[in-house]
Amino acid sequence: GAGVSQTPSNKVTEKGKYVELRCDPISGHTALYWYRQSLGQGPEFLIYFQGTGAADDSGLPNDRFFAVRPEGSVSTLKIQRTERGDSAVYLCASSLTAGGRYEQYFGPGTRLTVT
Amino acid sequence: DQQVKQNSPSLSVQEGRISILNCDYTNSMFDYFLWYKKYPAEGPTFLISISSIKDKNEDGRFTVFLNKSAKHLSLHIVPSQPGDSAVYFCAALNAGGTSYGKLTFGQGTILTVHP
Image (cartoon, rainbow over all chains, first blue to last red; front, side):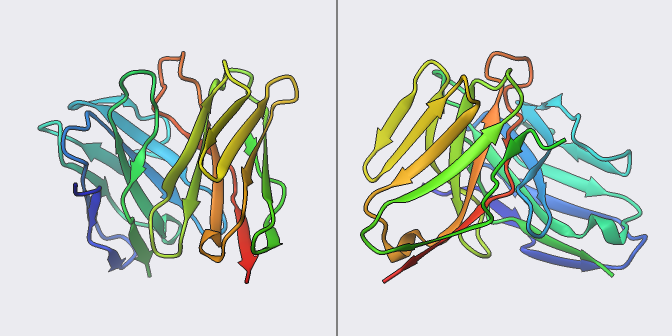
């Protein structure tokens, strides 16, 4: 079946602009996750949803970052007043979180460049 | 505070030989561990996982070993193949906690398998 998809694959924006990154999880997966990966580092947790609600948003770096999942499927990560330090690959993942299995399945990522 | 560490940035192995990738963690609350493989311009791909109630899990050419007392795990790939060349990430979570969706990743190890 189809995996996790993310759009756009690349986004270049100017400092101070607003951006939205979209994630389509695997059909039937109830949990959805956002991570950020900088060059030479492992992915860093941002937020995860169980259904429509944010179960843990402790990884969001500041209030410029916000994510929604209004119908429990597609999610949008929103970044206001972008800064050059926001440049990274933003990864989305989804999972079933059932039966004691915790594997998360990742999309290809959105590469965000803030100029 | 790096709670999951992969101290070897890179590893080079001959085709057919064993590859051993290592990972250390500091958070004693971690009780579920995963290995991911990542090719350039793709998202991480789940390889294998292990619960803290086990000390070994095997799946084909991949075996993960967990030493809880040492807070150390390793991934063995036997035999190694050129297609295994990728970045390997170790990740951990607290499955028994309230935020079981939060994966903490190591920095990654670049594996190169030479023909």
